[in-house]
Structure formats: C-alpha cells, structure tokens
Image (cartoon, rainbow, N blue to C red; front, side):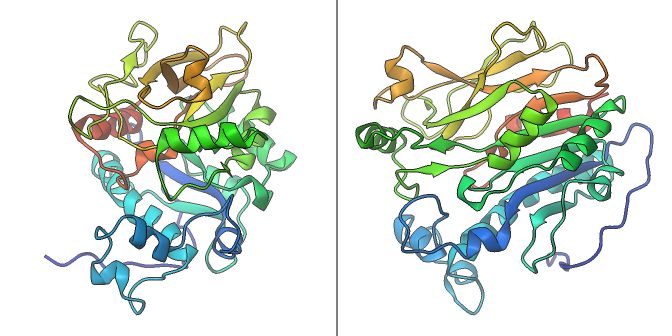
Length: 337
C-alpha cells in the first residue's frame, strides 16, 4: 500500500474534546529560516548541511530520496527535514492511541509564518510538547504573553507540558574543556560549541520550573552493542506511571543533563537517570557523576492543575532508533489521566 498523501501550509483545524482521548500537539521553538540560513562557513552553533550528514554517515543517506538534489534539500534545510521524518512514528503511535492527529507547529515555519505559543496552539491541546531545538544565537525567547498563555494552559486540570531544551555543548570558554566534550560524545557532526534552548529556558524561568539543560553526554550502551543502557528509574516516585513498562529511551550521542537548580524544592522529582559512557572523560564525569537526569517531573501544585515533564526531544524521535520500551513511554503520556 502506498503512503498517504501529505499536506503542507494549511491552517490548523481544532480538534474537539473527547473524554479519555488526549489531544497531543508539538511546538518547535526554532525559526526554521533562522536555522536554515545560517552561514555554513561558521564552525559553531549551526546544524549540519545534508551534504555533511551524507559524508560523515556514508553510506546511510545515499538513497535517492536523500541524496538526489531533485528529491531532497542538500543544505541545512535538508538536515532540519530529517527531524520531521523522524517524528512520524511518534505521530502515528499517538494517533493510534488517541484517535487524534498530532499537529506540529513551528515558531517560524518554512514559509515564514510566525506563530507565537498562544491560544491558537493551546486551546485544543491536552498535552503539549515543546521541543527546544533553537540555537541560542538565533535569539528565540518566550514573551511575557507566551509565558502567561502557557501558565493559563497549565491551570486547566489534566493538562501536561512536556518541555525539552536540547543539549548545551561547549558552554565553557576554555578550549581544552570543549575539546574534551567533543572527544567524549564522538559525533563529528556536532561542532565544538552547539548551544540550544534559549526559548525553552526562558519559558521555564517564566513558569518557575527550576530545571536547566547542561552538557551533551554520551549514554552508556549494553555490552558489545549500540543498545542504550537501561535507565535508573525511581519507581517509588513515579506515582502516575509515566514510566510503567519502560526500561530505556533511545541512544543519542549527546544528551542533556537536566539539572535541578533549586535543590531545596520538593516540587521536582527526578524520575529517571541515564548511565553515562565513562570510557572517555567529560568534566561532568570527572566531577564524580556517572548518570545524568533524563526525565524530571513536576506534579500539579498550587494554581497549576497540569503536570510538567522535562525530557529531550530525541526521546520522541526515531532518527537514532527506537524500540518497544520507547513506544510504551509514548503511549503512557498519551493515556495519562
């Protein structure tokens, strides 16, 4: 059977509320043109071109659908489109589970339409995923109106915000430290400095979520395989069952540590930690850390009737592989009550 026809550049049709069927939406915090138009002679803080992806990962992307310039963009835009390819399975799983389509919104899309995070995105959503994939140099920042809109969204009982600022590689001004980080994660496509998530950081600050994305850490893998090592799950804290039946997420060479910045707070629960590959040093592991925070949860509290989860956008992508455990996590968030 052929693939379904695809549409683009249409206005969103709001989904009707149906009890027991969550409406899940994705909001990407980047300016697509701002990322795609970055100067490719700049070494740092940009995405790879598709040509660079094909060269480094040869021959994985030598299929005509990726290598033929009449079929696929070969600049930075091509790399950005890989993300959309890799979110399709997540969208399918959620649609199969809830009966609702999963719209993907962009702060500024390919056609230059700007969409702040407001009621047009929030009104028909029960679960909102905000992917912090904007490079800091593109200066995306949540406005006071957007912060207030999301705060109002979370006042609605039963809502859920899943927010994922991506990695923060090369934050140190010391070149030696950046060199160590680069050797640790081992991904030739990631520059010595690649700082993400200005938008999501500003949104979390505005909402009083005391979590910050740090580093880009290579997870440990199962012996003699590329399968990511199991999570260390604090099941006694997971009273909502977010991780019921979940043993692992998916492998990615550089994942952020979600540091809890207010250690005195009892409102934040670290539900899962990921073991780190310690075969290559990193300043974080040299400081004595062997795991990083992979999933953080803030249950409803005060005026907030909704849940907040902090998890990397990679967890919802098949770009680096996926398995039954990952799909179980997707279904858990789609069926949360």
